[in-house]
Length: 607
Image (cartoon, rainbow, N blue to C red; front, side):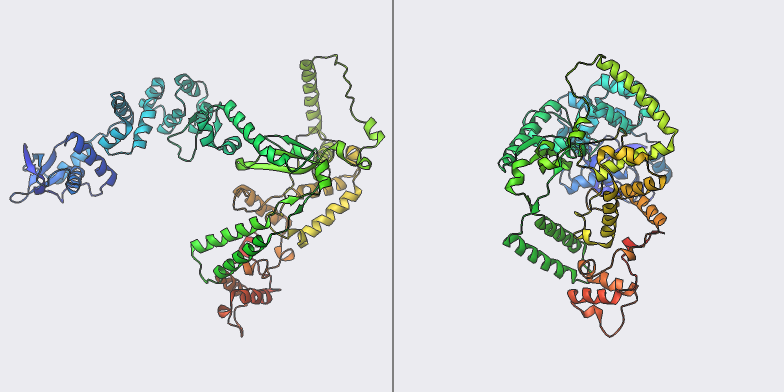
């Protein structure tokens, strides 16, 4: 073997080179390195014909050199250092170099980048020298900054790269080490490590952070830790006090506009819960009538929707536009609620931060003291209320907590052995949530609350459906039977199990949620259980819903309507459905499919 400087234009890849699959990113990185540092490893070549050589090992380097020629960084006849091999098997030489090459260990690369940074080189400069992005360099520098004790574990293969990356959300070596050495091995998953290191911070996805806005928070001097290895995570806010102050300021500004509406009182509760709202009666307002412009916009959008639904096979973009139009129409129809001056003068409002950081305003809330006189508690009920005198308790608060904890433990144990009382207690807790949501007279000591599912926002006119009317009849019948909230517990304890079971069923029914919403709908496991529940109940949607032009056929594409006619075996006949206009086709489909029992796939009974 001898070393020879050979013009690049005389070098060509050998058919004996065992590396058949190239790596475009590796070629880019090699080209960047060769341009800055030169060719650090000679090519292995053998003479082919006169003034030409085959490259047995170094195909990636050859490709990188030719890329530099293409970019006019070097000349096409630049002299390249080569080891010229005679009389050896070319394939064997190629295999030996590729198989015996030991890649640089990641930890060594992290620290090498760190050394370059300490020499004053910026991430962008390091990236240019090695053909990687500046983001990759910053990630490597973050890894190099992890505690030396943890890096030692990683070098010894006692820690995975994913675990090492999780530590980069904090620069505190002591906290990093505690998050590893201070927990059991099963608590060392990357997500557990991140959670412990960011426990004192606020996720950028939190309601308060969304409400204030990251830009406003940073402009006020707030710090943000960003996880370079989790592109889905927007980071963590480090100054909770500043965030709370900014949220309070913004809520107060929003409150000024609500006060101008004339409400008797206004309260700001940043993290308002259902329990906060259920303390009040709520006087319903009426929807503000649509303006001429809103009516015209709805008409225009509906016409566009009809035109799109005429298309036999709409594109993905067209289907998305149809969805967007439906959202726009729904938003236009959702006009503000309005109350009478009389109601505004005796009711109030609560401002809070809702899901996604949006401002939520609950208007029309009536306090107990503002109810009409004939609606207030009677004297007997007032006498039955707990003693609220100012006499100082004879026991300390700590002792009271201790003793009542023991009492609670005893209650739990006894209730576990008494299914009859447990049934009454569960029904009592749920019935208070469903039938007495505006009552102040009673509450349950059980940590159970029934969250009623409201379906009106998801389906316009659903209150007039057969299922809604039937459920309403059930509820009205029970409302007539149930006593006042304060008397409910005693009443329930006097009932037979059959009565309790019936009341439990209607309370449970109000909580069922299996709506597939575009955003924030039921989870996959909930929907799977809904299918199981449907099977157990023998649900047949043909008894509760009928496909009509308004409910279905006018809201899907022509192709879907034709498909429905074919499935229902109603496609043939004297009328050529494919030639009908969309509106006529929807009416035709309603008439043809009536009585066939056909349902869209999503409403068919799960097997």
